[in-house]
Length: 393
Image 1 (spheres, one colour):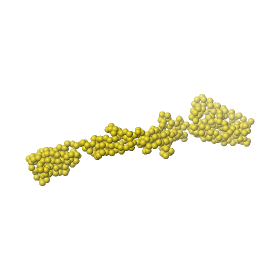
Image 2 (cartoon, rainbow, N blue to C red):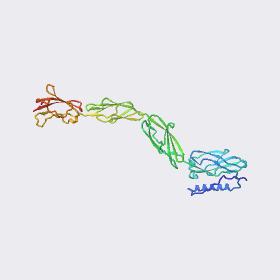
Image 3 (cartoon, rainbow, N blue to C red):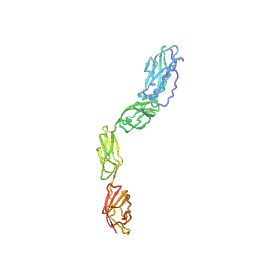
Image 4 (cartoon, helix red, strand yellow):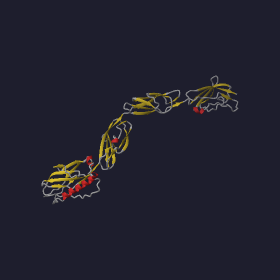
C-alpha cells in the first residue's frame, strides 16, 4: 500500500490550556497526526501543500489554493479541507481552490485558541492514495463594532451654522481602534480624528460614511444620513438715530423669513419700541425649528438734567456773587450763553462759557443795575434754558 509523506512535521508544544476542552482537542490533533505519519512507507516525491494568508479579519473570505507536488504520475481527484482544526474534512471538492469565511461564531468556539485555526488539506489521488498536508495556522482578527449606546455617532438632524459633534463609537474585542475616517457625500471631505466638530454652511442632506480601523488592519464601515436644515433669514433696521433723548423712543424692526420672534426684553412682535440704553437681541425661529440671533448696535438714551444758574450778580466787588455761575456746568458739555437787556440788546455773549462773567459789557463797563435775561444752549441738552438774572450794587 502506498502512503504519501507530509510536507513538514509540526512539533506541538502544549502550553497550559485554558480549559479541559482545549487540552482534549490539542491531544486529539497530536494523536491523529502521529497515526498519519507512522502509518506506513512514504514516498518523498509526494508533497502536499497549499497557500493562504497568515492573518485575516473576521468575515473575510479566505482563498486556499493547492500547490502540492505529486509523484508517480498521480493526479488529485478530490480535495478536502479542515478549516477549523477539528480534523473533520467537511469541505470536499474536485477543484484545487477553496474559499472559507471565518465569522464571529468561529471566533467564539472554544477550540480556537487565541482565534488561530489550524487548516489541513487532504488529497485523494488517481492512484487511490490519501495524502495530508501539514497543518497551517491562520489567525483571525476581530472587526470593529459600534457601541449600541452611542449610535449614531452624531446628531442626525441639525441646523445650518450649528456646531455638530462627531465621535468614535466603535470598539474591538481584542486590540485597539487605531483611527476613524469620516467621509461626507461621496468622499468630497475626509476627517481622520476620533473626535471632532464641524459647522455646516449649507442646508442639505449628507451621507456620512464612518470607517474604523484596528491596529490589526481590520476595518468596519457604517453609513448614516445627516440632515442640515435651513435657518431663518432676517434683517434688523431702525426707525431713527440710535442716540436720542429720554423723551423720545426708537423702533427696532426685523423683517425676513421666520415664523416666531423673541426679543431679549420678552417682546414677541417684529417691531418694538425701546426707551433704554443697551444692545437688543432677537431670536428668529422658522417652521424647521431652527433659530438665528440678531443683535442691534448700541442704543444710547440721553437723560436731560435740569440746568440751573444764579439769579443774582453783585457788582460791589465784595467777593460774594461777583461772577455769574451755571451750576454743575461740567455736566452739560459746551455751553453757549447770551445775555440781553430789557430792550433785547445783547450785552454779553460767550460760545464756551466758563462761569467767568462779572456783569460787564463787551467794552468792560459795568452794566446798569436791574433785571437782565439769559439764554443757555448746552451741548448735552435738547432744549435751551432761559431765565432772569438781577444785577445789583
